[in-house]
Length: 353
Image 1 (cartoon, rainbow, N blue to C red):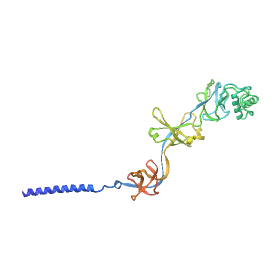
Image 2: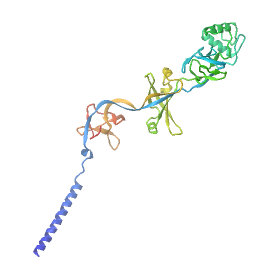
Image 3: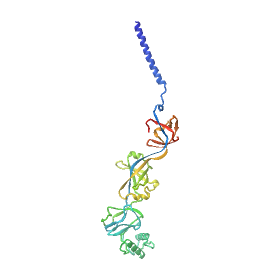
Image 4: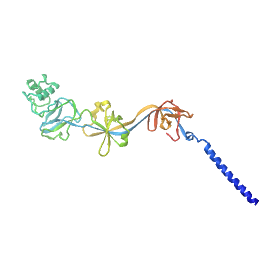
């Protein structure tokens, strides 16, 4: 009996001891404050240093002229020579090509050539002829639309300069009048080539305008990073760099996105160097699309930035002191900040760059 009583008392004591241990553990868990997450996180430290932060994507820009018909041929016969190259700038009296060895020149005028002109002719087309002859230094008289003796002498002198028979008469196919000169042109290569036969009436002269169009094919995700106004550095075939800016975007039937570019404040992208772009076909130009403009300043890894409930940003130094900062720009995991001195050691999560 005594042994049974002892066992009962021993068992009861064990239970009380176990319960006591459990209560003590629970109390410790409940009453002990949790460790600060920052205090429990491993950190490494980096110095605030001067640097440059920016981001860009290398893509191809497509440059392409859009030819617009501006003049038609009225000469008949075989094309014997071609005297201009695609993209050449032409002015009053420039020889474009020859037909049966007779020169065909370009001149300024809103009235297209439609008849032969000789002494006694009158009209706006005669005025256009006189204007060209005056610009070339052959016509000393007044532009009046009357083909008189002075005009005849001027035509003969002009014909002699071209190596032609100086008969004083201008055939309808001798001149192609276009509205604006000087201008950059390209002859239609399918119609005007050595040995081609012209019947008259062919639209052979294409104007190229002031500059080609510039565009950048991109993916949907790339397009989202390139809002209107994004700068694109375009390197031409001679190594010069032009700046274009995204002015819009087009999506085709296959959902492919193309950014269209323009110059700053309406200026030309290629300015005086547009002639380096071939007048026919498309040109691929290596380009850098600047998704985040580069800024020079004090840099830290973006992982060093802490934000409070109000959205205020700070960095913490190696003495556990917080310093409020302002972020100027961020890209590729780095930030330019203001508010702390260069050389300050700030902490970042262990393993951060």
